[in-house]
Length: 265
Image (cartoon, rainbow, N blue to C red; front, top):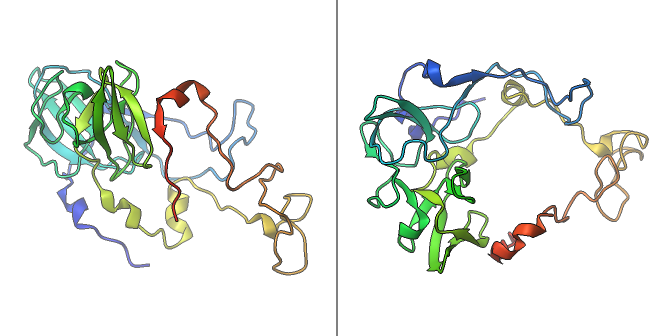
């Protein structure tokens, strides 16, 4: 298989990750504390070290310089290593277009500049943001994957209306923080796996089609040759609906949603 090359990856700094910002995890391969498989199709994979990312406002009002752009095996986007004026170092999710040597800052009201982080109430309407907080002080919870971004649509009383990457429009407290820009490596969605090897190195084991199983193993199983599933709708191995089923059950936050996401045609 021809290896996919993106010009974007050339911006990464050739260096070892920062030792003080690394953690090692034991891979449980989808098993619980008793050793039973609770999540299928997980296991094997290359050993990885987790980068400790600052998703919040750990260093408010302290300017920082981007000293490196690095790859993170645990996420789709690139990360940037920041060196603060007080000598501390932190990893953050890198926005698209950021360069080594750029200076950024996190404060309540800052310059509308790529990478700067500030309260949503001080971000002009129409600005593209990422790493959006949902509760003040809890850090960025949404809009963190490669190429994603949200847009500030309006400011009303103590809430701001924001358009999410899914096209959903929802209210977010103006006291929450967000970073200016969109997340780096938007070309990630064009990567083709190509063969089984890359997925095995990611810790993903093979997934067998239900229609290739026996009836005792899956609702889609059985039949002579390659036949249809013989059901009105697809089912999970446990007999529940598999397609077109709403999975959202958090009614507590329904009041913040102004417009539901649009269905893809």
